[in-house]
Length: 206
Ligand code: FE
Image 1 (cartoon, protein in one colour):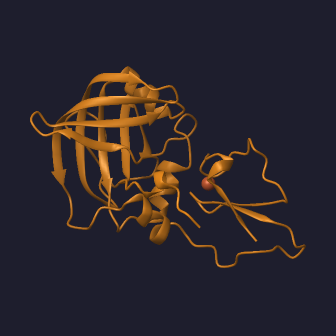
Image 2 (cartoon, helix red, strand yellow; image 1 turned 120 degrees about the horizontal axis):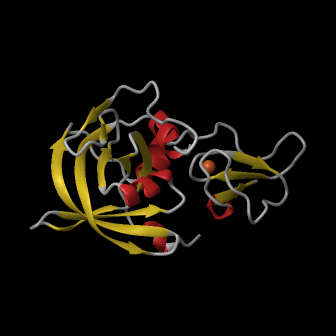
């Protein structure tokens, strides 16, 4: 089967954290890129549905923690599959450090953190593209960075059994988190209850 060329782009994975109104929040993104070295500037694209996005519109400081190949799936569940609107993603979580710009760096399953100050933002419809000056860049470990492809191959749990249910129904599996939906047709407007990705991120396993 021919691969989707857009899926052949390579991406890193990052925990993006922000602080506004005295609260911390974070989400997982794959859209951090260095765009100039002198001065040191990066861009981040953030979905407007993320609570972290709203916080960045209020307070222009953030930290991106670079996820390494040693990261556990629990890191993705904590920061990727819930919304900070109704949960405190940092509750009971101590593997963090308050950086100089006041946002939290994640120290577990990461190999570096970079703090930034946003000085320009571009409205892209579903997302906002933020352009930021790097304030601080700190290396934490020599573990290789995890790519989006590595996450799918080696971090996301692989379901043990695929195919048919006892009743012979069709299974649709979320390619992002592994959630399985049973039914002949997956509704077009279906949203994964675990990671909130749309029906287009599901694959049919029969
Ligand atoms: Fe999912």
